[in-house]
Image 1 (cartoon, one colour):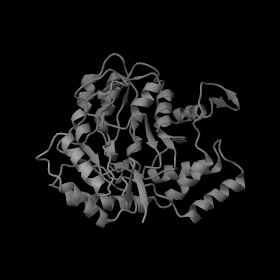
Image 2 (cartoon, helix red, strand yellow):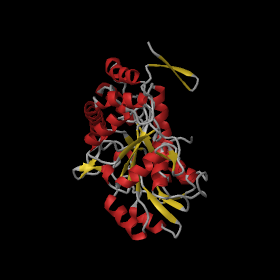
Image 3 (cartoon, helix red, strand yellow):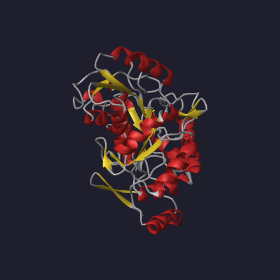
Image 4 (cartoon, one colour):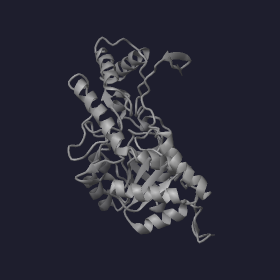
Length: 376
C-alpha cells in the first residue's frame, strides 16, 4: 500500500488535491525520439513550432507565443505593452504569481474588491480604484470563470491603459462561442504541471496584435533580431523537451477536460444546497480546472480541512490569504477579497479521480456543519 509523507506523518492512499496528467510513455517517447533525431533542444525548435500551431487551432486563437512559464508570460505581456512603472489594477484573490509579475516589472499592485458570486475582480470596484497612476488593468479569470470582459474593455478604453488577462485557469474556455483568450490586449496562460493542459513547466501569451507578438518573440530570445540585440530582452524560451510533453498531453486534451467536467458536475450535484458554491457564467463553457467551495468562515474551513486530512484527503485554500492583506506587494489593505480568502477551499479534482472517491469526499465535507465551531 502506498505511503505518502505529509507534515512529518505517513498517510496511506492519500488523495491529493491535484495530480498531473502523465501521457502514456509510448506517446511521449514518440515526440522525444523526434527531439533526439533533430538534435535541437531549444531556440524555437520544430516541436515548439508544432505545438504553437496545434494550440492555436485547438483554442481558436492567433498570435500565440509559448514561453518558459506562466509568470514570465505575464511579465512579458506587460513589458511588450510598455507597462514599466506606476500601478497595476488587479485582484487580491489569486495566486501570488500575478502580483509578483507586476512587482518584478516595477509596477505596484493596486487591489480592488471581488464579485461575491464569481470571485473575479469586480469591474465597478476596479473603476472606483482607478487613480492617475494606474497603468494597466490585470484581472484574473479565477477558476476558469470569465471576468466581465465587456465592462473591463470599456474601463480600459476610457482610462486609456492596456488590458491584460491572467487566464492561467482558463485553458479551453469559450465565452459566447469564442476563446476567452481573445479578449484583452493580451491574455496569458500557465502550462504548469498542475494545470489541466501542461508542458511540465511552461506558459503562453495570446496577443491581440501581430506586431506585439513579433516584439515579444525577440524579447524572449535576449532581444535579438538576426543575431544582434535590438531591444532589452530575457531568456524565456520554451524547450523542445517541454514541447514534447505538451504535444503528448494535447492528444488527450478533450478526454481530460470531459473527465474533469464530469467530476466537477458530480461534486456540484452532491454538494448543492449543502455548502455554498461559486457562480459560474452561463454564457461560457467550463473546463473543470478547480473544485472550489465556500465554507461559512475561517473556523469552519479549518475544521473541514482537518477532517479531510484525517481521512487521507488533501485540500487547499486557493487563494488564501488575500494578497492585499500581506503588506508584501503594496501597503496592507483591508476588505479586498479578505472574507472570501478566509472561506475558500478547493477539493481534489484530477484525471483519474473516481466518482466513488468524490462521494466519500462530499460525505466528509458535509459531516462538518458550520455550527458549534470551537476556537482555533
